[in-house]
Amino acid sequence: MALPNSEFKNTKNLMDRASVSQRIKRRLQLNEIFKYVFLAGLVFALLVLSTLIYDVVSKGGGWVNLDFLRNFPSRRPEQAGLYPALIGSLWLMMLIVPMVFIVGVGAAIYLEEYAPKNRVTSFIEVNISNLAGVPSIVFGLLGLTIFVRIMELGNSIMAGALTLGLMSLPIVIVASQEALRSVKMELRHASLALGASKWQTTFNVVLPSAIPGIITGIILAVSRAIGETAPLIMVGAATFISTTPSNVFSDFTALPIQIYNWTSRPQAEFQNLAAAGIIVLMTMLIIMNSAAIYIRNKYTNRH
Image (cartoon, rainbow, N blue to C red; front, side):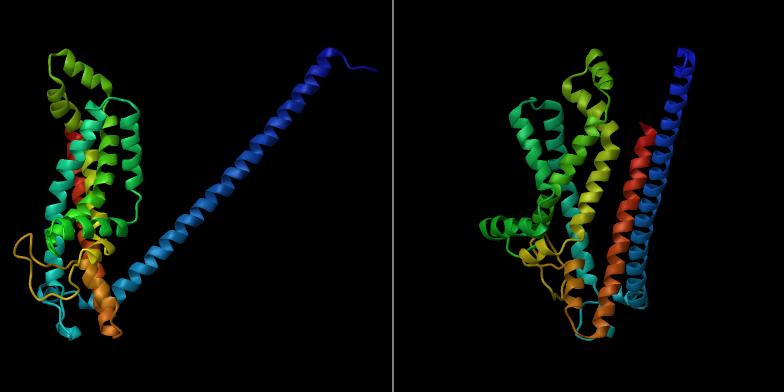
């Protein structure tokens, strides 16, 4: 005996609802599974990071003091310090920041605001993005060839800064382009409609709005550069130096080089000194990133 149409439709609706409920239940279960998988990944990463920080602090914390910061390297661990390396890293920072800001932000402004949107521009942008992922030792070889040998800068701090700046440029350009793209087109159109020129619009409207993202990109790029060792080894940064740089053409060393030198020593005391150097380097990077966050928030609130 066939079911009436109304009963058949009701039965079908009930089956459809049951099927939908089952699918929703499976999706919710899958969602819970992935939530705990991601949570486990986060916990694992935090455990590894905490273990590394604890190991570094437990070994090097007792060696970090004022004498450690102002003493020169020594064969005796109790008298050794990283003053020349600290000054060398500060020199590198002071040279890299204006370099990547002027060249990197300038290139990003041209590519985003002035360059025609064609295949050539797209080709350039793709290759800039690819350069951001090139291993740092490749930039070290490039710096050795161009800055050290062809330009005859020797093993100077300028050669090291140019090499690290060249390595940082792709990151700064990509980050600056993304910051410029985040500025609404309506702001550009409104400025142009009021009679402002293209340059006035870019300088007075677009750039101030994009500054938080640009500064973040610059700080991240410089932070990466300051922690690099391979490029500095390639351009000839000294592993042992008893003087501080007096100008941009002086010999130099940097914190990663000094840490690398201490880790290569077999004595346990030098391993502890390396851990202390890592603490100083991490502190510098934290200060730089904190400054970037402060400046970004300040400009965000203003604009």
